[in-house]
View (cartoon, rainbow, N blue to C red):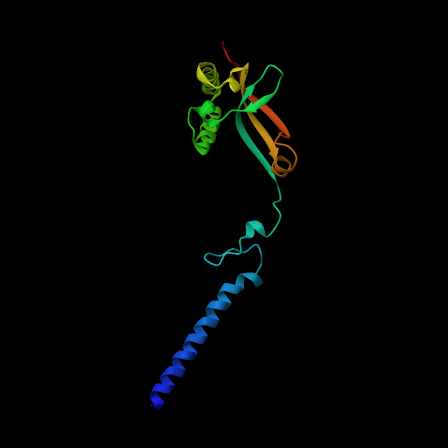
Length: 159
């Protein structure tokens, strides 16, 4: 009977020790340096300090309207593809592939607008492919207008 009691106590001590070690491991990120990150006990450092530079540079396909307004085209019109990430990559690739490739891409977009777009886009007079510089904080807090924009390519929408 005393062997049984000793065995139970030993298992109890082992269980307690294992529980304490696991608890210490789970709590340890709370006492470490916020910039450290270790899988699987992550401290999520991307949330532990401010982003030093909230800038975003985005290459966009824009519809230009008679009053001068510019609106980003949806992925399907800009590239013929509904997938947002694939469309972003295609715009970047087409504008990085040389002047002729970028001109051809711009004309393709203008043709898509002319052929069958919704009435909202039919009023566009031109397509611009531009590199826009945004402050991400301002984008969400005030307005989605870029800080600056450089036109890489411009082509008319033929009627």
